[in-house]
Image (cartoon, rainbow, N blue to C red):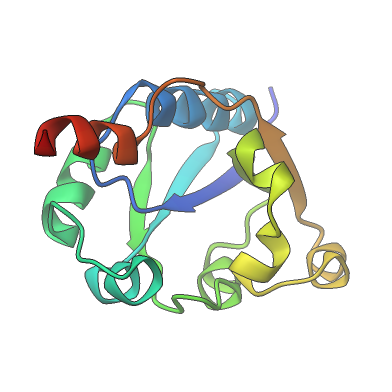
Length: 144
């Protein structure tokens, strides 16, 4: 059976079904004996990028992800806007993201190019986005 290191990253502020679907896809791609590594955005980066602090701290978000059976390791996305730093440490075969990123400039967001990925033999995979749920929607409902 194939074994791969699969990387995904994000904030995971309020873990929901869409996140679980993404992580489950990552585990399926990694193979039974493979490894899923989550690059978790730091509190400082989230505040800088999104303009406000996450609801839950990095430590809390990390603990929840580590309890998920589809996640093997959680590491800080130390480079923030430049994800190449964490990707060079992890050396994944695949980066997996939701298909909602296919409509955005994921390469710019992560700070890499297709050439950079090719040089490292990394394949970017878009997995189906789960419609109707997001941390932003949940936060909006809570605030009402």
